[in-house]
Length: 176
Ligand SMILES: CC(C)(COP(=O)(O)OP(=O)(O)OC[C@H]1O[C@@H](n2cnc3c(N)ncnc32)[C@H](O)[C@@H]1OP(=O)(O)O)[C@@H](O)C(=O)NCCC(=O)NCCS
Image (cartoon, rainbow, N blue to C red; front, side, top):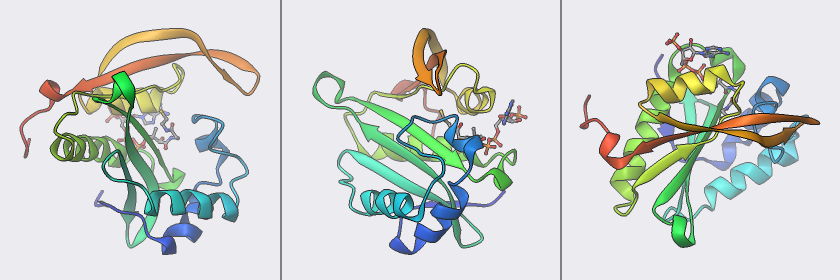
């Protein structure tokens, strides 16, 4: 399905408030992503994206038919992790299963490696039971490096998370 990745705009706030307010999304993310998800949450999120320092953060809206329907980001680490970036994403439920996030992951990883010349590693940490996200990462070329047992406390349940990474040298040439 056609979509574009683009910088966030303040006008996206209402769409974020609408689409992010979904417990099926929140239950797969860190607690910083709330449910219910209010207009104030959306305002705070979009502001932080608009004001982000692109020397260390890439926040992109996933736009379909003129509306922001999801989010994908890369955040560069600091100190000894300054050559590593963390990947995060979510998509409005009505657009699931159409290949959007697999392609969005490929695109933002390429942008990250193109933009930040010292970047060596992009990683993501889905909960182990998040089959959809794990499949997205595998299809986008990430390698499962390990399962971090009992690393997560989410909604009073302890669960495992997975470490997936895509190294710079794992990237296929542009256009593939
Ligand atoms: C996970 C998520 C981003 C997937 O986005 P998407 O655009 O639907 O993913 P794609 O369409 O690119 O699907 C990629 C693959 O995953 C599979 N998949 C998607 N959801 C799945 C699920 N719940 N269980 C098993 N497989 C699933 C698809 O079938 C597809 O594999 P295939 O091509 O072999 O059939 C989306 O469901 C979402 O936003 N979930 C909530 C938030 C979240 O989990 N974020 C990630 C936190 S680490």
